[in-house]
Amino acid sequence: MKQTPNARPIQRYVALDIHKEYVAVGGMNGAQEWVLQPRRVEMSRFRAWAQDNLREGDAVVIEATTNVWDIYDIVSPLVSRTVVAHAAKVRQIAEARVKTDKKDIERLLCLLIADVVPEVWVPPAEVRELRGMISYRHRLVKTSTMIRNRLQSLIHRHNLILPKNCLTDKAWWDGQKVSALEKMQIRQELAMLEEMEKHKAEVDAELARQSLGERWGKQAMRLLQLPGFGVVLTMTVLSAIGDVTRFEHAKRLVGYAGLGAGVHDSGTEHHQKPITKEGRKELRWAMVEAAWRAIRISPYWKEQYEKYLKRMRKPNQAIVVIARKLLVTIWYVLSGHKPYRYSSEEELAYKMLIWSWSMGEEARQGMTRQQFAKYGLLRLGLGRDLTRIVRDGYPRRLAPTEEVLALRPELRPPE
Image (tube, rainbow, N blue to C red):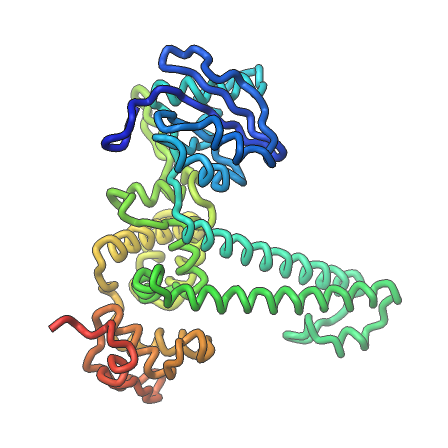
């Protein structure tokens, strides 16, 4: 059993099985004898129960579930060791026909005593909050999509011809001959869609603010230099990865995203399977989305995609390879603190300008667009002498380095 330095030896092993309205608890000693008989503790009483019954010298295992982190934050300061178990892997290890709270606790305790619990990483509070925001944004987008699909269904039902970009045009809908009940539905759908878009814009503004903050700013700037990455995809990837140093090498990160190929290796048979799709699905989605964007705007990634497409003949399989390679690039960029080698300073400056155009003055922290673009370059250690770029035949100005350093002296290199 792993212990922190100077911690008391483990005396009791305690398992917590979290349910919606209660927590099933139970404890054993090292000889697998019950020292805390299995019982149910109402969720409203759990904090008081934990303070009265848990102590230093206890090792606690909690199976990962929706509200696991609230329980973890209560338990962790009270005991010597707290482990959060991967729920799916626990089921694979301890699959059984008989499933009761007592049996679940007993299985968790056996794994904990043997020190073979399949652990999950415990993200700090700021990572949990960012993950919650990304998840909330996903729900907003999903709701908006459902509303748009219902409006499209009405259009198909009545064989209407929808002008371009008129799906949310109230005046166009008012001119259509539909029933009174359908008009009420349309009015409510458009109102809900407008609200969803307002909420999403507010979340996007907060993500932009977070991307410039102390916690995520440096990492966000490094990812934003990659082709295909905007603020939302960048923050989605960072929320999923958290601390990149917990991945010893790029393969671990690829496996965490579920983008690694499965393998069948038995006897004389050896062949690869499709990707595992294990791990964080939002990271996998973000990488595939970024890959599609990258092959449209980057000559390098387009060439890579065409090479694999020629070999595989299936676009979806080829784009997964690009997503995997992009994720490997991310590992090197974040862990090595290195700039992306396939982008020039001029390309990065233009990308920073595009980013600044989508942000308000508050999100830019009072900087002008030209100052913000230079600020982004300086955070990457680039573009000190760059004051002008030409894009699509039009010159674009950047703020001088000293002008930005006067506003953000923390970027000034130590003397």
